[in-house]
View 1 (cartoon, one colour):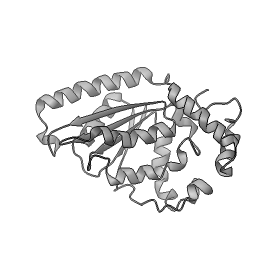
View 2 (cartoon, rainbow, N blue to C red; view 1 turned 30 degrees about the horizontal axis):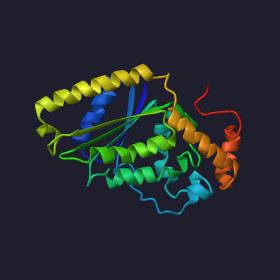
View 3 (cartoon, one colour; view 1 turned 60 degrees about the vertical axis):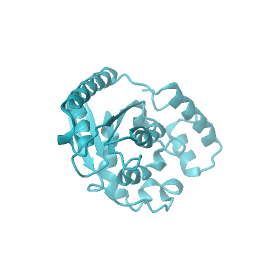
Length: 230
């Protein structure tokens, strides 16, 4: 199993430890990136990725190793501590660069057979909204199944998290890893994802953006082919 973790911070706090705990229980090869250490360029809103091609993004080459890791992964883990009830600015900026991969534009077909996990922690609250920030992207990328796990750790470092809570986290990540392993190689997109894909397919038939429409046509998706079918 190939696992790619995107850490929304460059320090190793509670979110980092939980993401690593889950990845290690999944087994396989783990590739991880830390933001903004490994990628910190801000989206400049040039719209080149939408109107021309993704390789026209001024940050395409820098982002390349992360994109390749996402594409070869069986499981993608997006992990971010809560900053003012949302993900870190580094995680938001990272996700901004993949707008062209949303189903409304040019989704990567391998995403429709992957699983993802969104993990967030906070000393207080905000995990639900932070996980939604990340899960919005995994859904619109077309990822077949996204799990969300948010934990209020009541601490500002992993060392200060209560032992009892660490035991509960350990149990939850064990159960989550078991579910992901059971679904590995057998997962298919939900009805919601397939319905949204169908709506986008109808939109692409109108050819409102020629770059996107040509992409869908080349994939055969305007006909009977679907990205989640072998």
